[in-house]
Length: 293
Image 1 (tube, one colour):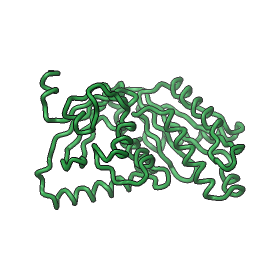
Image 2 (cartoon, helix red, strand yellow):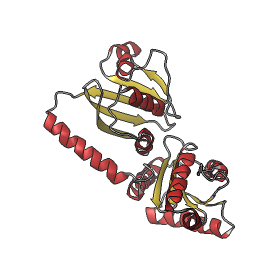
Image 3 (cartoon, rainbow, N blue to C red):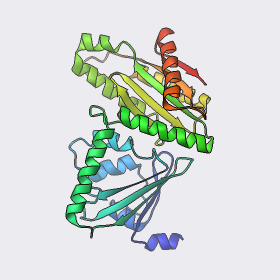
């Protein structure tokens, strides 16, 4: 099988639960300018390809925002497929298959021969779909996309009986930051918060902005105790963050409401429990976690 993969024109790669490349056949390595032994994370690979003008065609002047947006969709579904344009002129049909332990199999086959006008229409459709799923300021999932991911997680949880958790996060006294430092500073705090939290999440975890200073984290295949530990690390990291270079003494915090997903849950029920837990955390002095089953 490895010999067949080695000789195949199909691009094949395997990424671990941390989204680090663990196997890639020669076709994949050639397309993305990887040496035979390199083992980068997917984000590092995309960042390097964008800098060098190689690999995937990424039309952006802000690679970090592009990565946040891409990561808000990558690895969140058991399977997804999409079209992608490579810098060498090839048009590819790419698929991602996720295992329960967070490993991902990526495959890509060339479809360059499709009519160019049809490709342009599909590109426009994909751009519109990404825009409809993305919070424009932070690049992470927006409320609509979060609710879609939550519904899919509930469906999988019912079928697989696998543990999962939902957390709602709210920045503490955010209005005070806007009033005292100005709205541009408030926007920078939100972007710094997103960067801090994303660094503590797994590839499979969902993360997005519900609106304003309120966010949601989806934690599939996670027991409550593990979710509580992860949220504790988020609280500590946010507490230590200093988002404004011009004002390094300014810190901030967040409060978190956490709940497990039940087999009979719908979106409204689990959201209400997490929101009630958040309300309890706010009433308990903020900068803390409140959880419920």
